[in-house]
Image (cartoon, rainbow, N blue to C red; front, side, top):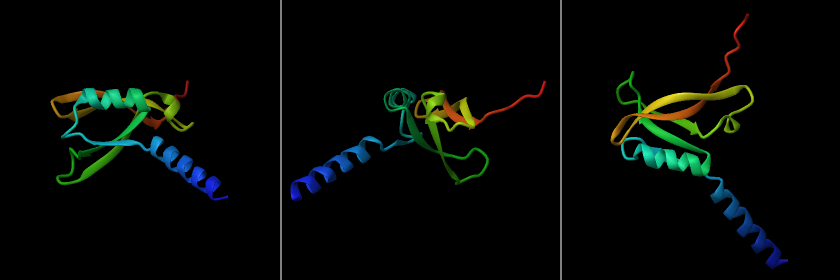
Length: 101
C-alpha cells in the first residue's frame, strides 16, 4: 500500500512538472531562446511592460500552433520586443474572425 502511494505521488509530481508552462521576462530573454522554447514545449508565457500604460506589466501566452488554442480561437501573428530584438515574431491565440459574404 505504501509503495503504491509513493509511486503515485512520484508520477503525479513528474507529470505536473512536465506540463508547467515556461515563463520569461522579455527584457531578459532573447528572441531565439523564446522561439526555441515554444518550438520545444508548444507554449510560453511572456511578461512585458505595457506600451500604453506606464508601469503596467502584461502577461500573454504565446503558442507554436493553433492546436494550443481553444476551439473558438485561432493562431495570430504578434511582434514582441525582447532582449536584443524589437520585433520578435511570435504567435498568440486570438478570437476567430467570421467575415460575412
